[in-house]
Length: 404
Image (cartoon, rainbow, N blue to C red):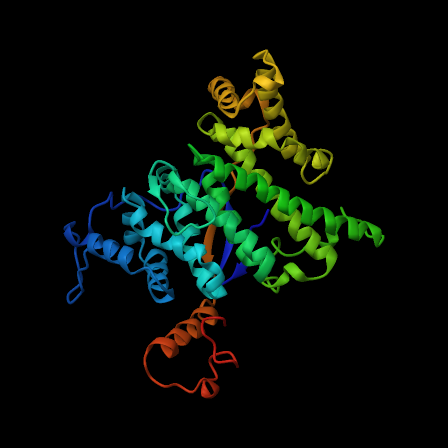
């Protein structure tokens, strides 16, 4: 698994499927109006006003750092956010910032992803985010997105961030955070859009090709590509691998093996726990089912690939039973057959059920090593005081603009 990857003042770790991420004591009651006892001199803040104001102000790293501090440091506010029905108020501006990742610093992206990971630890958040429909996403330029669920949009943006990171930043911690949030969301998916399903399969294809190239290079160099001794990156304690995607071939290969397995587990989790509600996932997998064949005998992936192949075999039989010639099949007709077959699908009859893969965010024992320079870099950038970065020993030598 990918538990234990560190960076940005925290680590990502796996926990058992039975564990919960906190109590639900507030039940959407505004703390300022709940009748709770307050210490003398305490400032009473309306959570509803704070939530709405954050939704209007999430435009830069100052506001996102404040939101992170509130979610991580104030359990009552986190609980309040998780039961709000209008989660698009906060999530849409966050997603727009994540969409603009190429114009942001790594630290800014870290905070955005940590916020998403913290929220994705809650099952109700994952369920509700797939029920809320977004009518239009004007800032998404690659294609027109209409009437897509907030969950599908978030999945698309997380996958897009992985691809951007692979091509530009090459940061293991960013990869792990994105995949961890996707893994948390997977069992609760419903009505995943065709575009999100295609992006998920495309993500597997991209990582599979990268892993295959690294494995072939290692084999050509006479290395044992299955030997566990060279593993690094997303396993272990997370030390020294934050910038490790571009390291030595054996370690890099095992890092991508970890990522590839997580994506397979994401797909498996969706098929096991949410298949009847996601016909587009089945369609996307059927369309590119040949991608999984090279990994059917791989010891790291075979059990997960076998599950996918068993599911696809079930739907291929349903397609054959329809008795139609190849020329008669249309996208609409294939979707109809998949939807009808999905309604009768029982996971326990076709797949080996694995424990849900769940990740949590845990702040490091010394988070100040990340946050103190980061906060002071924001002070220097936005206070209006003409600081001389060369005289500030706390910040990186280049003065830092959030890159530290």
